[in-house]
Length: 126
Image (cartoon, rainbow, N blue to C red; front, side, top):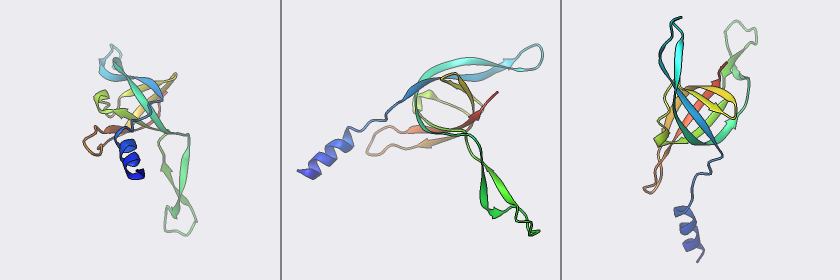
């Protein structure tokens, strides 16, 4: 009985989309040579992590013995979006009034025939 219940739960699991965001993509240049961004679509999003800062590594950055640590850039946001969102590198995402520049996009595969999603790493964009 417990196994049947577990299998039933496994098949009916869905991603809990928490909010929505707007995707903007470079669409050319204005007369001043600045990039123009055009609205592409609105999509659902799940927030995995949203933090600010830089983390110091546990390994020294140099061999001089100065005990200096290397700074590892961490993404300000790690999000999951549906495959249909078609998010690409350098897209700008607007979520709850915060602008994020996409720095990485990784496809994650679904299990047992279910569709996957995209894992997006993004940094705050000013």
